[in-house]
Structure formats: structure tokens, C-alpha cells
Length: 130
Ligand SMILES: C=C(O[C@@H]1C=C(C(=O)O)C=C[C@H]1O)C(=O)O
Image (cartoon, rainbow, N blue to C red; front, side, top):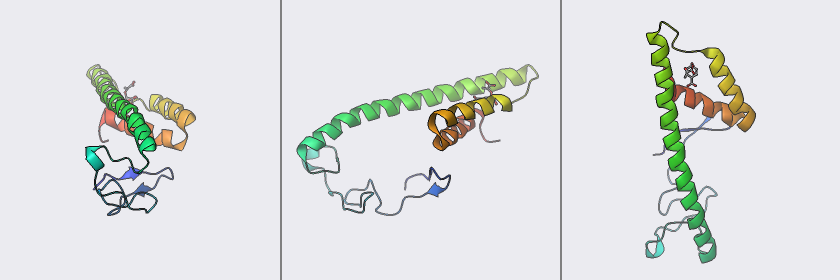
């Protein structure tokens, strides 16, 4: 089962059985995906070989981006924790809400409502549960 995701509306979407990603399951538009990967090639969601080749190429870059995002996410969380520990060891506060508001605003301006959600998750990753 996939983890819940925060939708643009702020609501929570849950995957339904057979919704996506499963071999032979239904894709997002309700059409059935092929149950197997012909010849061991990655599943692309199309039977058109030219489109499939293009998709495989694009997915290489998507996977690279995802690895970078994960790496940067982890680096940011570690740095944020270091700032918090340094500040508390010096008698300061655990959080600085004015700084957090600036970050939320930066993400909102760049990415809209999704940016706000993303920034909230980033901030939470750095400080742990309140
Ligand atoms: C990292 C800091 O500490 C906390 C964590 C923040 C963050 O993850 O960006 C921002 C503000 C603080 O609440 C900081 O003050 O810069």
C-alpha cells in the first residue's frame, strides 16, 4: 500500500486497490495496464515502442532527480538539527518561528499551495515532531 499523500486541496489521498503501479492493475485513467513487462523491459504504460523508448529515457533523468532530492532532503534535515542543537546548547530556543515563516513564504511564492505543504514537511524533517 502506498503512503498517503497530501493533495493540492490540502486533503489526503489514499491509493485504492488496483489503482496504479500494480502489474495488471488499473492505471490512473481506469484503463488496465499490461500485466507483464514484455522481454523484461521496464513497464511504460504504452504499447507504442517509440513512445516507450522515450519514456524510458526520460525516466532515467527522473530517477536521477529523485536521488538528488532524497540526498538534499537528508542533508537539509541534518543541518537543521545541527542548528537546533547548537542553539539550544547555547541557551537559545529550539525553533525560530520568524525564520520558519520566511521559508514557508519563499516556498509558497515559488510553488503555490503545494510549496507551503512541501516547506512544512521540510521543516518537520529538521526538527522532528513537536
Ligand atoms: C535551522 C534552524 O532552526 C529551526 C529550523 C528551521 C529550518 O529547518 O529551516 C528554521 C528555523 C528554526 O525553527 C534555523 O534557525 O535556521
